[in-house]
Amino acid sequence: MQPSAVPELAHTHARPIHWVATATALAGVVALSSLFQPGSATAAQSPGPQTRSAPAHGAPPDPAGVEFPFDCGPVQQVVKKQASGDLDGDGRPETVAVVHCDAPMGTPPDGVYVLTRSADDATPRVVATLVDPGDRTNVDDFSVDAGDVNATLLGYSSADVPSCCPDVRESVKWRWDNGSFTRSTPSGARSV
Image (cartoon, rainbow, N blue to C red; front, top):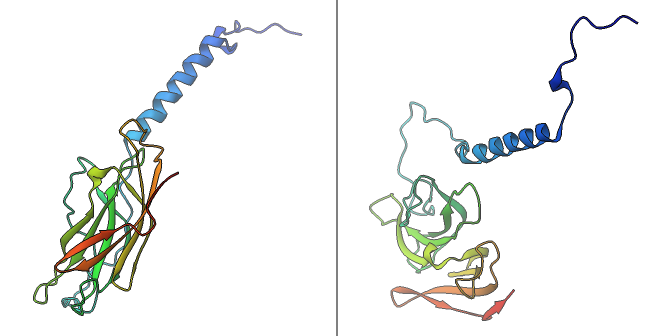
């Protein structure tokens, strides 16, 4: 057997310090990658040369592009859920939207908003806030049924409860009554 003309390289033998350095570098790359997320994907057809007419008054308001009344800082607002129905009995449907900030980590609180549009303007606008994101709640089940807005809210019994682990579950219902939405709690709050 002929001896190698090249001396043995010191770095070809892995030592514990090499593994620690590699793990630290990998953790740094993963942490930095969580800060740089791509934007939300959207699919839309580009408008052709034809002109668009205003939506029919029978169509529910579309929450896309609506600025909801809370600040998300550098991230965008995301419509998590939506449902439509005639909530006030005027013959035109409203849309109820569950919205939160598109946070890269954690579970941001939800806001629940009612959208409508007037008979002479096709632009949707927020007319009521049913749940404010400042309440630190998340919406689980959600529906609009026969003029009622039904939701299951997940919340916290105190400020000491971590945001990851809501410990209160509450079923609530809102109904349009005498010019405003009235909230009722059909089954009461329960600890989870």
